[in-house]
Every structure is written in C-alpha cells, then in structure tokens.
Length: 430
Ligand SMILES: Nc1ncnc2c1ncn2[C@@H]1O[C@H](COP(=O)(O)OP(=O)(O)OP(=O)(O)O)[C@@H](O)[C@H]1O
Image (tube, rainbow, N blue to C red; front, side, top):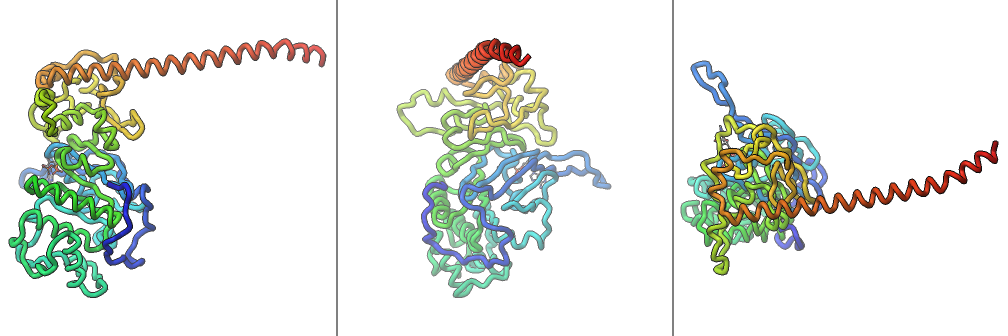
C-alpha cells in the first residue's frame, strides 16, 4: 500500500506546530515502536474483590510500524488483536512494556499528556452500527474531533465536515442526517471521515470491514487504500483472517494467544509461511481458482478453540493444536527470531526452513491427533520443504567450511614459506 505515494490530492487542515509532539517521521522511518508490550486484565472475586488471576490478553510483543506502511495484524478471535490496537492508541493502559510514537515514550502518558497525540493517532472501530451515536447527526459526529481538540478549520467546521464527507465518497448534502439513515458501508465511511478529521499520522483500524457484506468490504478496503496514497497515512489493520489484509498490507504480524508468532513482509509470508499457525490460517483462505480441484483437501483444520488466555499452555502456546509439536515445544518458549531477512518467526519446527530443534523428533500424542486434521499433501510438502532447506543450509555451511579450511591451509603454507626467511633474517641479526 505504501508504494508510489502520490502527492496529496486531498488536503486536510494542517496541524499547528504547537500541537505536534515531535518531528515527522520520513517514509520508511519508525513511527511507532512497541517493546515487550503486555496487558493482563485482572480477574477479581468475592466481596473484597481479591485478584484471583489474570487474562493474559497481550503477553509481551515487540514490533514497529514504519511511516507510510500498512501493517496487517491477523489471528483468531480472542488472541489479543483488539487489545493490542487499544494499547497502541493508548485507549488502554499497558501492564508492562513500552510504546514509543515518533521516538517519544507514550506508555504511561495521562489524559492531558495524550491530548496532542490524539490528533496524530486515530482508531476506526469494527462495528459501524454501534460506534456512531444514533442521536447525533453525521455533521456532529464527524465534526466532534474539531470541538474536542479546540481546532477551528479554515472555512468553519461545517464546510470542513462536508469536504471530509465527499473525500470518503458520501454526499455532503447529507450532513444533517442520522446514522440509521445510512447503510453499513456508508456508516463505516462516516467512521473513516471522523478518524481522518484531524489529519492523523497513524490510523489503527480494528476489523474495519468484518461487519459488512462481502461486496461492500472491497469498497471500504479500496477507500482506505486510496486515502493512504493520497494522504500518506500509516495503517495498522486488524483482521481475523488473511483475506482482508492480504492485498493491502506491506507487512503482516500473525498473533496467537497474546503473542506474535510470525512477522514478515507480505511476499515472504505468502510465498513461504514459516509458522504452522500461519500456514493453517492461510489454508483457510479460499482461493477462487477452479483449476485447483484438490484445494479443499489441502485445508488445515485446527483442532478445538484457542486455549484460555487465563492459563496459556506452557512453552510454545500453539503446541496443543500443532501437528508438528514435540517435547521441546511444551517446555521451551520459542523466541521470535529473523530466520530469513524480513521474516521473523517463533517456532522450533518451522515450515519452509531448517528445523530449529532437529534432535527432538518424537511427536506428542496431541500432535499426532492434530495431524489427522491436516491433509496428507500438506504433511508431505511440509516434510519436503524443511528437508530441502536443511540440505541447502548444510551445503552452504560445508562450502563455507571448505573455503575457511582452504584459507587456513593457504595461510599456513604462506607462514611456512615465510619462516625460513624470517629464521635466516634472525640468524643474520645474531
Ligand atoms: N476488558 C477486559 N477485561 C477482561 N478480559 C478482557 C477484556 N478485554 C478483552 N479481554 C480478553 O482478552 C482476550 C483478548 O481479547 P481481544 O478482544 O483483544 O481479542 P481479539 O483477538 O481482538 O478477538 P476478537 O477478534 O474476537 O475481538 C480475550 O480472552 C478477551 O476475553
């Protein structure tokens, strides 16, 4: 989405310098940086409301968002995507970790500290039916951010709101209508107009199209895409499957039970997903290709629901549903590491890459059960690609060692050649 940004064809009111926190990030520079971010919701019980546990909704995630890009965040329901979105827009207070926006630590900024930042970071919500106040006209709704921030746009709020409505493809004459007079797609456009009112730098869209009909989804996604090109926006788009984000994201983060399990640029992720969970999510996206007669049998059906985030599984959190899980997966949490340039993954037995724990070969009983839900073709392909990558890596290592040995031998020979001369020099000195 960030490619070929055109000049700003649609102009929005420029922010006054006093309201800008820091200098603008240039395209490609880090706009938002998240380190070890956590959100644990306490579970309280009894008269005294004692804390008896916690929901580990987001449990230590690291990523960055670069200016001008679209970062897609995907994962099943309940894996912490919305919580992550609310943490980075600071609608929720993090339990731990750090959020930096344009180099400034905003993790624990209070309401007044956040006020100037509210202009720069906006959120579009999932449900266009409940996110708009039914008693307010759309003029009031879209104009609210100006009033809240005390901003007087050039030409007045009404004129600016009407301009914003036409930017998102709505009739500016409908300024005085109420939300119920609009369809779902139109209401989401109203939500987008409201989010864009103050010319934000970062827009976090939480499931922006999942409540809409499929035919309308494409229109809203295309609108977001066009607006990004025209206004140079940076997006974090949250979705529960890959079909929404696959065309619009530059990079994609895959979340599972409060953790990022894979973070990669779009091409790498689609060409060769490395985490078994990513592979399962990808296999669930239908491909409208009649030539792929066997497409159905290649599906990976995940067993059961996502486990409870109150007591997540030990080691790798996906091991209870993974068809590749071995002993190490139950005891050791895999770190999110860059196995290839532009592709980070947290897995002991990644797909399309050399096994990270080759000594651990015995499948767990639950992995054997899960494997029954994975088509034979997928299992065969999985074994093949991992073996092929392992062989490739072994070859490269052997070649590198051979070059090193040859180099060392050459040095030794050179040293041997030098020694008599050096010795004779020494004897001459004596
Ligand atoms: N305010 C809250 N108090 C307690 N638990 C919460 C709260 N908000 C979210 N959770 C829990 O945190 C976990 C993650 O929820 P979250 O809404 O972030 O997931 P999600 O991936 O966005 O799911 P969905 O797509 O269904 O919205 C869930 O188990 C949810 O029940």
